[in-house]
Length: 337
Image 1 (cartoon, rainbow, N blue to C red):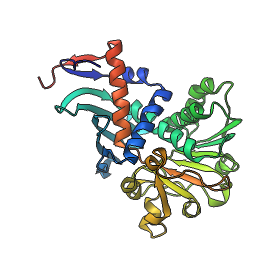
Image 2 (tube, rainbow, N blue to C red):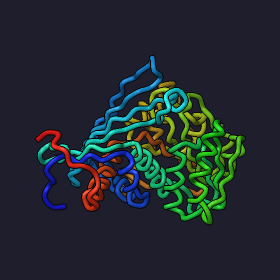
Image 3 (cartoon, rainbow, N blue to C red):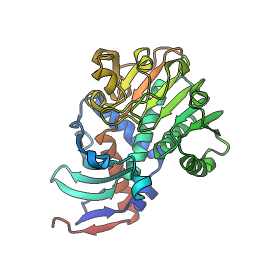
Image 4 (cartoon, helix red, strand yellow):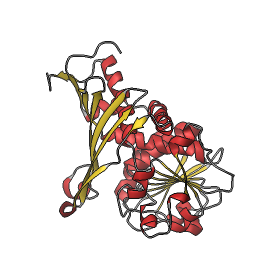
């Protein structure tokens, strides 16, 4: 990359979004998971501030990938009522990319699109390692931003599907999803919106759950043998989307044990004594690094518990930073010098 530019590069959310390509993000995120699996990442668990009177929270997420020499910090909120009450996104994020050698802030950038893309990328990577070969039917539970990037990543891995069933509580959310994803899926997958959640899920080879639910939405009897489930929505204590009976019969893979046990899909069953650490097969990084196997058989149900890792943000922000410098985007500001 050459000498570090003088100043900190500031990138707007729009500039960042224009630089993101799912295939590139997946490559970077899979490398980050591998580095974690090999024990070459520093990543404290997320720190939470809970704004109970406002129905939201704020999270701080630092990380350092030692072999790659990439470091960053993200702050990100989750306020489920933002769209309806404030006209703001549910999730907003800012990322600071750090030069490990000096601690210098290389860049400050919008992190909302990065959050969407790197989380979608994790779902695609998990499916690649855990789903049955050649899946044909996908179910999306929820139709917001995460449903979109989950589908984008799955299309990047598999090329196309016979059918993608989509369920959402809100008609407006469904309409926006279909308007954006319809052209992307043209010739690659038939989109099938439905207001019947059971109908959406039954028979699916891959299921992605992306809601903020605090009560199980998906019943055990709806899940076919051999299904793979990406659990994305449960990302804070008390959240859950699956009947715990599904988890008890599944091969469970988490992105990070400490975060998942505290705030992922397994957090409620663990707090109730229904699951323990011994019920978790592996972290995804261990599978990517070849230290543990993925799916055990075509009949096995597999579950990926995603809480979102700071290392995913750091490598994606680094990708954006390098592309922005190459294209002359953003503004260099003397924030600290």
